[in-house]
Image 1 (cartoon, one colour):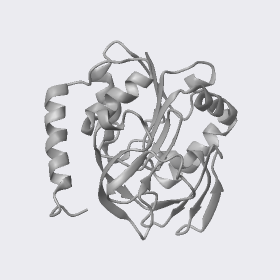
Image 2 (cartoon, helix red, strand yellow; image 1 turned 30 degrees about the vertical axis):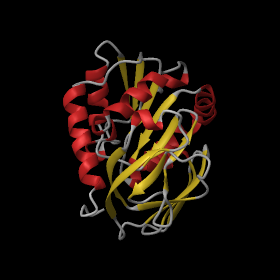
Image 3 (cartoon, one colour; image 1 turned 90 degrees about the vertical axis):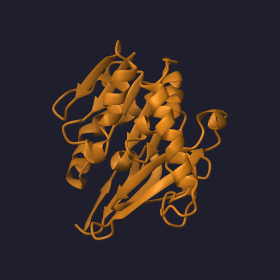
Image 4 (tube, helix red, strand yellow; image 1 turned 180 degrees about the vertical axis):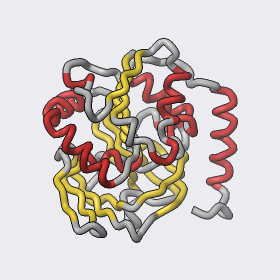
Length: 242
């Protein structure tokens, strides 16, 4: 099992590098490749089993687009082959058609691999919780409710009615007018759910690892499931504010 982590020196906001820490605990014998901006990505010449990138600042996001641009076609090939990719927070926006940074009065093209756009306003932060279920996935019932949090300056726009990641029961989807969260194409997942999402959702972790060819139990499974069950109860409570 080979896991590549992109740009961890900057793509590490909201504690989401704990997704990687949880994967390391779950997969103690796996090879983890830490790719920095100055490195040639491992995926450029090899097939990772799982590719991860976390949230970052807006300036780092633009640098990530620039750095990954030479590998756009390679990323498309990996998506088409079904490589498991998890991009959390605003990392997925790197793959979008376009990002508008309204506060900075900057517009930039993304890699154009996901047909969505993002609008980022540094004076309009959204903080909230998420309770949802996997969208159009035969394993949705087995995985159960997906929980997490959101803290973002951006809103996503476009049509994800056939490619959503989650159907949101409580919380926000792509934007305030949507009940469908994120983007999923084969095994590529772009989601604004943070938390970090993997240790908060051990069954989801197991689902993604099974897709990557490693059907193993999540680390600290019993305690993680107990915490997840309690979180679901709290988030299903109508008194819980989202």
